[in-house]
Length: 481
Image (cartoon, rainbow, N blue to C red; front, side, top):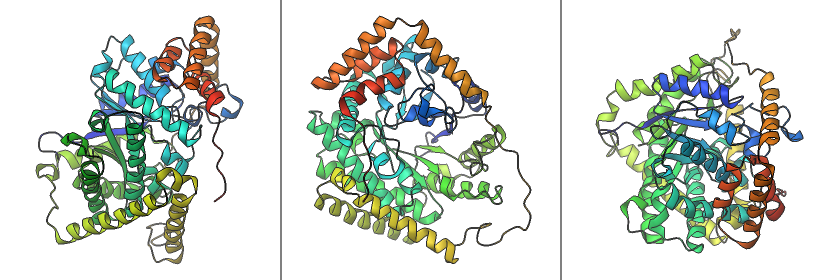
């Protein structure tokens, strides 16, 4: 818990160009943020450069546009990477973005072995709940295990995956499903790493998790406690881990974006405060608090600052950080913890009976379970059985608009021009040669990371590196279930 050190207070941010996002990061650090959390735009997440035809209208919209090493250097200009922990929410292109980050650190004179942070790198939940996948599941898993093996030597302090229940919950799952399906994904990653020849205690200490902190205050606290207990048993009993750090479920939490309302947005401050308190009482190691205006737009600087202040008040003023597991022993919390652990375990047994996580995803079973839970939740809201303040009860007849963030449309044009300059001024022969070596490694089974690093260092773009892998691995197309 937090008697010696508070959780890392992060604010998820990124928009427009690297230069614009760099200014926001500097601002957040000045306001007391302890670590950075990078949001990438959809083209970057999908392995497309800003000048790709399908990227039109999406460049810099829901995160920062990163197309090459030049962008990554700009994103962290003036930010000492040996003194800042960085979390990057990126999955299909995670290996590429981590390579860009390591190269940027080296150019700052920072030893990559001293870098700390997390790359989300959780592709399975993309097939389940979110959709920013590129390759079919099995080659995508190979990229992840290649990253595990490479990072163990090159960036040993880096968390090489953040297995995400957050997006599963945002897609409509229940609390039990969030725990069960997140741990089912973790089991799949661990089994893939073991099959690739890695040793459990060599990579397990760098696994981390990402959970949602939703509205049901007591259930959420119990959910975090149940996940921690269940994971420890899995690691010890199923995988034979010996290192105590391999059995520790370390997690980042984010308050529930799906609970934010466009109606009466100031009320979202109260929702977020309670959700953040649940995450803290449940033992989060890292936390992001959503801003009041995020149902309407990207957050303004003012609302992002207020969201950060919410964490700071919890950490420094409430006293809840003075006691480890302050609700441990509560009859209700202990009962809920055991119930969630029991029901999540039942789900894990059912997934095993189906042939494991990949088969449960490929058949659509997990997706259907989430869709059924989401339907039931929405039905309760529409019937009035579940109250949402300001939406189906306690409405205002007239609501005053609040100031919202507006993204300058010129930023997309500027990013496209930036990509063009990189492609025009780089050493074309060196970039082409590095890409060819990457394609060969994808075909012959060699570890991909050194070749991704080489291509990125020679200013091959995110889109070009992704296309080289597409040519070998193909692209995933979701089928109806």
